[in-house]
Length: 480
Image 1 (cartoon, rainbow, N blue to C red):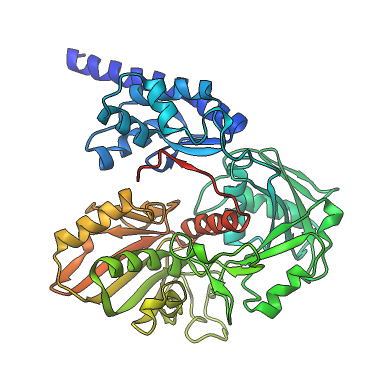
Image 2: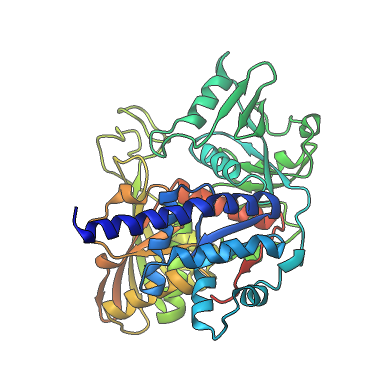
């Protein structure tokens, strides 16, 4: 073994050692102080040693170099002693800020940057808000995973799921589908089923399984549930009259639909128009996965370059609504075998954008092609702009937006010649711009946006629920 090889291995071992020492502190800060540590938006909670080191490697997109874990380890060691209040703290931004400052006293720097939450300053978390999942399909189970993964830290508490009973061992099958997923992998933790009491315990979170076929006939207070937000992920009711049935149930105060709402229901794309959420809103929609993917990108392009008009074509993974083999379907073409065909169909996403971005009303058309993949879709934005640009200018702007703007949790950016759809399974962003695919011809541009139409969308839904629950966790340091 050469000296260089030995040195490389020693360096890697030192990084692993620092990450191992960091893990318990990350956990304690989350459990005891309700503090979530991230590296440029990437959570360190429940991450392995390798996961933490990958997050530090990711920092090169921001700083131009891999984040030194010795720097972040020193910061983490000091955080526990500061008695922090509820917050989300970005170690990457703290480390970069300390390096660029003239200060030599790390503790003094941290006290200054985190003054809003040091010594318990700021709001302390009260009782978590009860959440009920009405439906337990693809989106419902991913919402359950997210809520369980962050139990105690989001201010949201998953209390129950409501489904129709389909067999005598229904709850066992439901738990199995939560435990194993062909697309998103195994549930990270333990699941215990109590058939006698109809409960599923997931990583210590006790979830009541309620059987009902009528959304207006459940008394949630019988299960100790109060002031709950119901997330209707069935898509069966999309207007106010249908969704209002949930509000007739004791223990329910608000409803969020995981599909485009009809009529006057507000369609919320978190990050774009969530400021429209009012405390007295009782029924809201989280729009669609496609609308969430394209609206943030369209907003920033329109703000920077102006959009005269355009067309949105979505290449969308097949869904449970389609047939496995050819059979009758009330929708056009959707009766043909989903796993064998590209299926041309309609999408309301282009028109739905206008509900979140009124300035684009009437400027966009749209269509969709369903393809034989189970997850991750793509939106192709063919736009005519108000002014000319270049590939480098447009991509540079979108990359900077993904890194440093207020929409950095919604928009991601990648420039790799080798990525394909499965590389984006599990992405927490609403959409990911594929920079190498961007086409520019004067004022005509084509932008390709990948999105995990299941998990990325579910993350947006949880953000909406937190907003509806008036949960405002400070993100520090304040510099963007």
